Image (tube, rainbow, N blue to C red; front, side, top):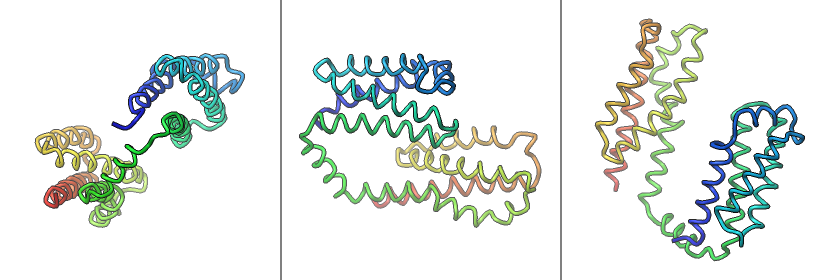
Length: 236
């Protein structure tokens, strides 16, 4: 086992609890209005440091202090930014980077981690899986877009959002299907298709061109993911 893995997991749990479960929406709203002067931000940061301290033990109190201070700095910075996903993602990345850094310096013996990385890197099957997941994201999306171009070009300009949303739905769909194929859960793919059909093909969307575009795009997307999964299993 990698040294400090339990310790690191506890810090991650503490972060998830304090940043999501134990942080009311009112605290976030006040932070956006008052920024660094927000009393609720002070409560949130204090809870973050205290919970980290309780989870990892008093011998690591400097780590809890570092987490608390850096959490305050990151949240103050975020309070000045628009409420957009990229800033949320950056904020979470900074918090997790601090946690990872604390773990790295608290447990300097990383030979087990290096050994794990070398073993993982030397396994061809792992790289095949990485390539498969990479393929079912953007590359296969471009391929499907080319194959369904004759239908997408006929959709009204007001419905351009359909193709944009479909891009991300398709990526998530193919990733899920690929995972199900690799885990031999083929019956679950049928449930996924049924659920998507209920959501996407409602009465208000039953225009001929739009329906053809959705049906063909969905079938192609799922077929690509299934074939990719079968190829990966065949190479195993």
